[in-house]
Image (cartoon, rainbow, N blue to C red; front, side, top):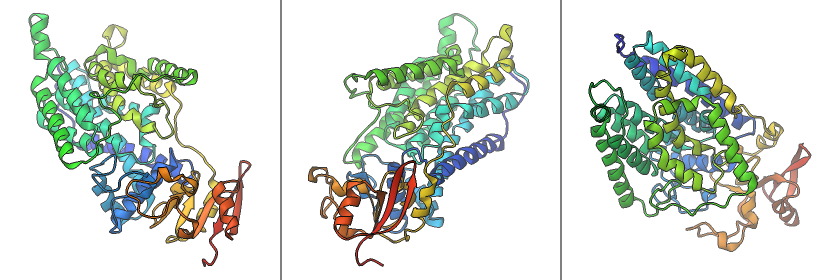
Length: 474
């Protein structure tokens, strides 16, 4: 029997989002301060793009080594104007890191609403409390922590967006589903494909409470939110058409129309995926098999990930944000399945702590991390307006200035010149004021040959970092 309790007021899921943002955003900012970002190079170029746009410059960063401009970059993130506006008010990298916490924690809103709706349909007492605990238990998942602490990746908005579509579709709230689809589209252009996949699945698969009496087929049709599915499918197709009109070059990490050839995985690579699959089985996400509609909707994405040669199983690194889209389907299935846990096995209230414990133990928690914090002393000696080149260990901490290069580009061959770059390539040392890198870096050797002087040094884990100044610079 459905629960007599009305849906909880909006402040409750908002409070969950605020708590998740504080946790994930705080960990994200700490990791960057501790010189242990998920991938410092990408955090640096995102910071450079936001800094440039906020200070009246182009929406660009040469660090990308790709076409420059809001729509001409390989990836376009429609949420960036909001981030730029907040950065203009508080010009600190921590603004981006807190936004990332919000991008991931926003999934707690649809997670709560989905769990609450399932609990009410099941007739659970105190459905809002059960849903709150179920949503918060998701924060114990290593992959969810990974997308909340992977520096700054707007594509993580796929997670709340797609999860929100699935949560709203279960309640037949088409307008809300379209709004969450808009959230996914703020992340990156691949959202068009994900929305089309979800919309098609919602047109064909039961996803909701089976309240109709009668034959199985009639009950299945009544539980299929096909009207919402058509609307979401239409949004996916229309948004793709809009992208084609405004974006000169399209590039997708997830593209079901142009599948890559199956990757030839190394033994270590294959072992990492098998180990990841083992962790999936040991986590609470397997309970989604009790409500498989969302998992079936995610099969096209799962097929692409299985064929992809990139190592998307890492919780820290350049591909940590790849967990966001598959998590949307897995979390929707898990929350719906958790509410359907059989009463003869204790029911949903007993399943909840077991679900949380399994999530906590399945993966190692990727944050907080600790890096070469001693290098912050050298970073602090670099003036805000100085033209700098830095290595991978320190580049993120120096981002947010007019000129920043990775020291590696100082020796890059001519064929790797960024598209549209009109200056000399590789970047001549005369274009820089300071260089912060390891002593054995070829760039440091070249700088000494040209008369650069050493200002300071710091040894970390057996590696010596040096801060060098160009001749004639104050």
